[in-house]
Amino acid sequence: MREKAGSGADTVRFFADSMLGSLARWMRTLGYDVEYSSSIDDKELVERALEEHRIILTRDTLLVKRRRARGRCLFITGDEVGAQLRQVAGIYGVSAGLALTRCLRCNTLLEDIGKEAVEDKVPPYVYSTQERFSACLRCGRVYWAGTHRDKMLDEIDRLLKG
Image 1 (cartoon, rainbow, N blue to C red):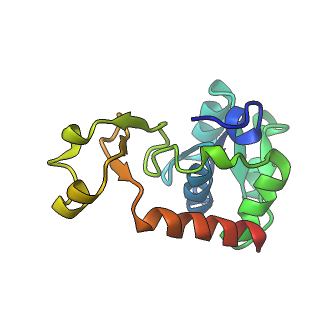
Image 2: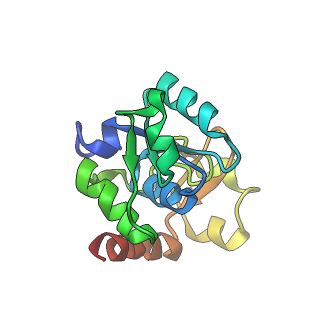
């Protein structure tokens, strides 16, 4: 599954603050390990990030100034998700082989799953036209390479190019 060992998406882990939900989702699309919670307070976010050895992604100037967070934050400067994604990718790199390997909902690495195991979890047309599936073992979400996959990859290219 991993194409470029030692790349940023392969080795660095993040925790996005509540202002960066869209960035977290697009980073997961690229294969980055990004935790996110829209309802976590700053103190708990810092504690979890430190415990889990994660870099905090934030647009909150007060969070950056917290003593325990110093040196563990990347202050995101862009207002739109493309600029934010380019900022992170510019610092930590992108591994094309990791795109679409994480659950977009809960951040877990996806596992290949046999077609017979998803028959009752996907639409009949998808089941009849697709051969390969992957699933999130945490939340149960099933993924396949439909036309939406190509659209997501095109959108990633657009976001990264600006």
